[in-house]
Length: 161
Image (cartoon, rainbow, N blue to C red):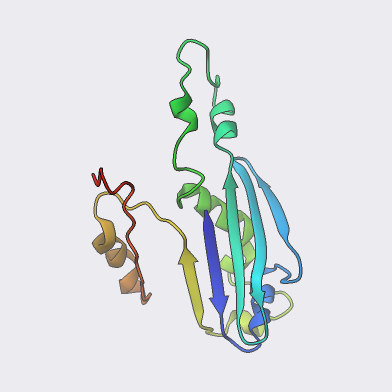
């Protein structure tokens, strides 16, 4: 799962102060379901992008469940799923744990920046949206003032359902 936050606010690298993450280094955070990596693929004074890459461990998820897989009901199906690839509650947990101070609107080193309205572009690589699709996502976010750009992807061209 990949989430990026981009700004063109000058200087754009101030995004690091808002997120409490240094643009000059990669940081890794251990989570109960995998790891979260924060890095900056782009960090200039004109444009800065912070990326949160969530590495969900599907094998660990199955093995860490109460009782884990047993020989009798064991199936590879429980290991093969979309959890590592699409946004889910795992992304919500990672955002809360990794960017908690930013979400709370705190910036110890630049408090005035936390109170400033800055342009942000948020990209979420893949979001499952069953039962409502694009209209549902728009109904959730557009009333809050977000502008959305949505690109649907077919799971399988031969089996659209």
